[in-house]
Image (tube, rainbow, N blue to C red):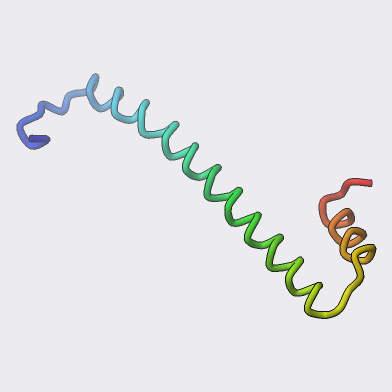
Amino acid sequence: MLAAFEWNTATLAIAMSLTIPIVAILSGAWYKIERTRSENGLKRSMIERGMSVDEIERVLRAKSGKG
């Protein structure tokens, strides 16, 4: 079906104008998922080391730059 479709400048521009936002949205979602996985792994490792809740909160605050 796409082989019979005529790819001229206008159709290519439309295709790219739709592709770029989709890639940006998917990249943002991927980034958030990976950041959450990383934070969860950090929390899990701190719990396994026996850190207290106060210590974990302090580390996470320092990591995020808040407080």
